[in-house]
Image 1 (cartoon, rainbow, N blue to C red):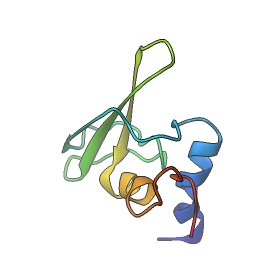
Image 2: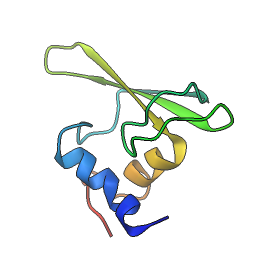
Image 3: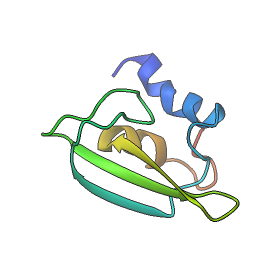
Image 4: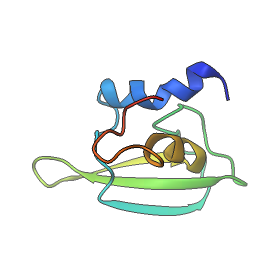
Length: 87
């Protein structure tokens, strides 16, 4: 993975595309061609696609889609409360 792609999850959070907290709900399945909220690419049918559901301040749901690998680079292995830190 290129250096710029590794840093993309942090930039996405800082620009407000994704909330800084983990999603309230998470679903997974085969790719549907949705655009990944983290890398901007489309999910292929043979890839794992995740649906991330967040609640806004008013309690309304906002849904984003992401590749499993992009989600992992964004949330897995990060210190709790610091999802946008880049090693």
